[in-house]
Length: 412
Image (cartoon, one colour):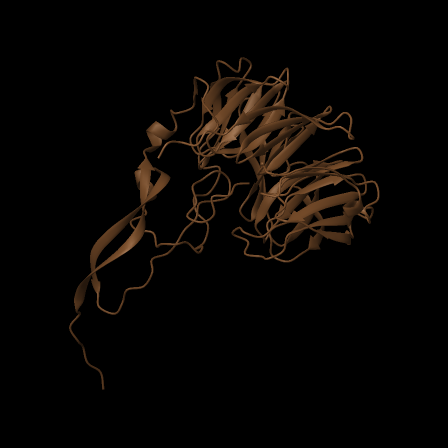
């Protein structure tokens, strides 16, 4: 037997994330130079031609004259809505801006000029991810989501049909998230970035780690840009490190290696699998160094440094793991290994013997929060939630703090 019944509706109230929009016209006209700002929520760092560029998460880029690392000068701020990552080739700065990729001429850093843009270069959302509250009323036709407000929402729904609305998170390349506020920043032939980078430049191509894809942008006709291709990775990519004609990608489930014999179509070489974890990677000689950490969207409980032997690039294998507190970015220079260990500070090791790194700690700067580093010509540039620190490491037995640009906490 079959029958029909009346639909019964009821009024419910619940707390939800309500999106805050910026219309597309305003968003795409927003790149401009402003007066210097104080660091409030710094992200990734990039060094080029004696200038240090520091990302202000979702806001833009601080321009720091670093000709004298002992006395850096904050000279300007480039407003780039939704920015997380940057890379520099020649005098062109490439930056993500929410869903777009923009090219900015910085021949004169005090007069930046947008010269090209690829609209919609990066998709808008990832599949549903866990968050504290459901999302209400998401409508991308209204523009770019630039923030979230928690509000009590009241609506009429069919009785017994209510369930949590889909929860969303923007892509990992420069868009606001409902999850962790942690962000992640290497193109040595151009400028120099930290190990947390999702952008890298090699020759006439920009490579970007984006969700489960490796995107290739053709810069041959710079300043014009075009999408040159896309490689599906079948796992979430987080960081890129270029080394000797290859790309080393840190993903949530392992380190991937791709060759660039055909720059527009990177070719898979090998993978080293690990537990689900967020991990940057750097490479030096026949070894790759990977940090795994807890306390993020990857939901693992492991905090360690893995040393991988890549002498046979088709068959990388684990040599040894070292426990850490909460390791983030890392850097290498000669025999030195620099590890940002989160709230446990900055640690520096002699990595000559990969099997005894833990026995050769040269320095430990505790009492600071460390996120990522760039070692360059004897000067270590380190960014963390406390600000920018610079150290002289020309004498590894006597490392000296040269300068600090502190973070200024906004008034409540």
